Structure formats: structure tokens, C-alpha cells
Image 1: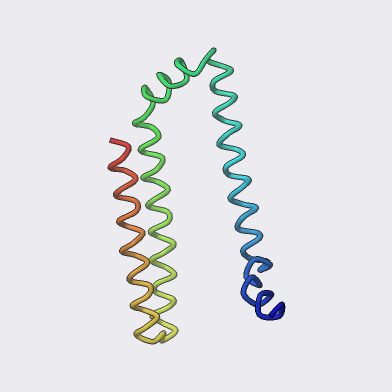
Image 2: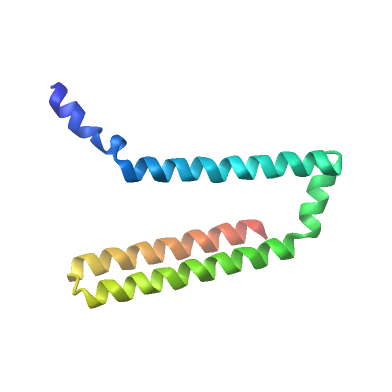
Length: 113
């Protein structure tokens, strides 16, 4: 029974997953630190909120640049998959990920409006 349980949670010890979690924690820590510094510099949460609202257009442009860079990288990855002759099941899985990603981005941006 313990051998089975160990195999079930073996993915938690995956090195790549651990590195991804560390990057995610680092990015979240930077975001929290930026918010705390902004609140402190502007003198309060209300002033910080007004500043964010006033500069929302710049943040939208930044997100568009990030989406474009991600789409460019994804396109290159997709071309490599096609050139390597991946089977139709894997290409269908990639298509599902693309559709899910586009829906998530659209929902996130719609929630910002």
C-alpha cells in the first residue's frame, strides 16, 4: 500500500514542477512587494487604487505585449510539433489547450472591463 501511495504523489517531487512553483512564488512575491511599495509611496490604499485606475491603459498595453510574446512563442512551438510529425491525438490536445487558453484570456480581460 505504501508503494502505491508513493507512486501516486511522485509528481510532487518532480524537479521541473518544483522550479515552476519557485518561479510562480517569486513572481507573486514581486507583485505583492510592488503593491506594498506603491501603497506606501502614495500614502494609502485609496491613492494607490486611483493611481492604478488612472494608468489602466498602460497596463492593458503591457498585457497585450505579453499576450503577443506568448502567442509568438506558442506559434513557434506549434511549428516545431508539426515538423516533428506528431500524431493526430497530440495535435488535437494542443488545439484544446489553445482554445482553453484563448477563452481564459478573453474571460480575464472581460472581467477587467
